[in-house]
Length: 164
Image 1 (cartoon, rainbow, N blue to C red):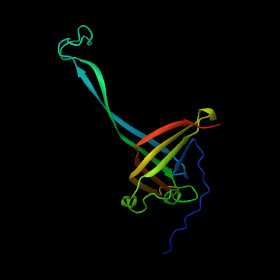
Image 2: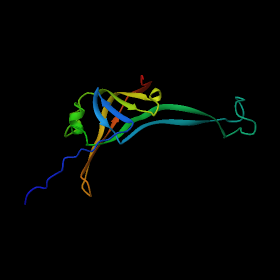
Image 3: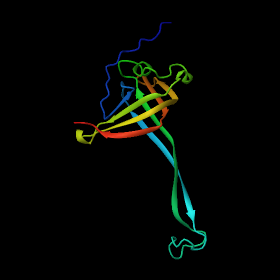
Image 4: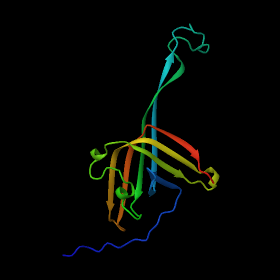
């Protein structure tokens, strides 16, 4: 039995999300999900000692919210392997084969969000990234597709308008 012939595809992707990993283009992404969490604690009044609680909302009722620390800074993305090189070659330095091979954080990952009006386009840069998850989905229920994804924990992010 001979191996099936896999057709070469000339499919392309054109949309408003372009991802760079340490100044190497990863390509257009079909899914990008940033996450961030913060615990918020209710503050309660015992009697109306402080005079802060609204009238009629005294003992045992919350009168304010106190924000806690920000945590859970992660980004998730998915990319179709339709580009010139597979994901791992497009983003040198990423863990290939085993997440344990990433021995230092990546300095930056930039997402360019193209808006219909170029003056409204945004560049969001994530700093000090550790890869926490990697996935590859192979499907052959019709056209053969390869979808690659990953999750990164990051320290902080910053936004800037894309120069037109």
